[in-house]
Image (cartoon, rainbow, N blue to C red; front, side):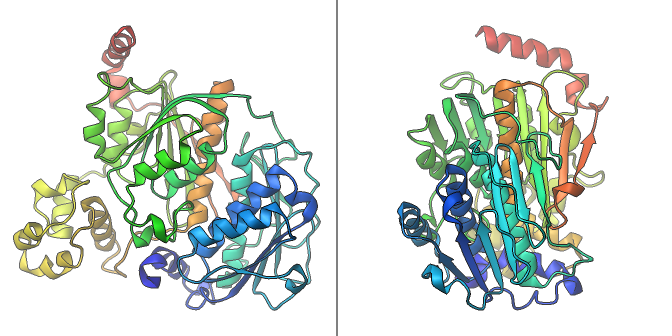
Length: 491
């Protein structure tokens, strides 16, 4: 299982080249997760600790946990038992936490420079992290699970840098960072309290790595309303390394059904294990159109399909090996829509490129949610049959993604698209921050996107404003879209 489960993480590490001196031998290094009793006694501390525990075993096979006796320890054991897919997480007495660890992640306030030590906490909308330097501020106690996940993700990022031996010139460790998911700025302002209720009529498109983070956060928020989660795929071994919620028992589970299971009891929820194009046909009949859509996809055409529903607000999370991005697309104003932002490159049609790269026929290349079959292998050119045969049963969209990535990189390492879990969960945190904001305040500093390199940190992030393209549907068909929205409201 190791090869598939860690394939995306090791591929990401290899991208750093000589900037990471231990990129070939980081998985077996020793990591300790611990926490301070005063912080762990708070809801924020609990969320930080458990999110960290869900992330660390996905970047390292040798994780130990040292916690004081109590309820949180029992919950940590339960979480560890569920997610363990390579080696069991080791629970050790607190007095043994001074062992020879390659990286220590502490949930609390205390910073240390005599050990490979990173401390994290969160407060309101602030995610705090420091590797060395001064102690973190003692939190005021303003609970917020969104910043807790972001703090855990930033702590996992510094752990990853330590394990890989990333050169400071490439990505220095975070020092005394206090970052707001309300303003996306470095600040000490905790921001507004969470609303008592977050009303939702929400469609979540995609329950992969970003979608897992979104579902995790939705399960921790006071939702009221309805959530539909749509994903035609099931979880495979390669998802263990990148999806925060899953463990070995979830392999083969439809992704949409996992979302339904996690959110049941929090709000009205349905998981639809079917292609997005099939689900869309339900809308306006058995299901009402959503007011808000979250796109957690890695496919341009699927993003366009979601945007073509023209909700009040479209939110999108995007990631690369280390880049994470949130984009926000309201129906009103002169802010770029998803179609403006995510465009097919000029040149050959996407299905032609996909057919050439994979050996699939053009007709099959436009069926992303189907799986590779024996008939596909038989119909492939002789030079692609063996390659395609090794991917029998895999979703066509993932096979296309793999093949086109290889083609663009001139035939470098085969495998899934490189990614690491903490990049996805940071994108999830920003997406859900915008969802919560929309419940109380229509204004946002994002017009339409904010992005940053996770290794260098959000202090180096960029706001990227963009107006609507004059040749995009949102401009050329604006009147038709407005009329259609009015008609469906009346219906």
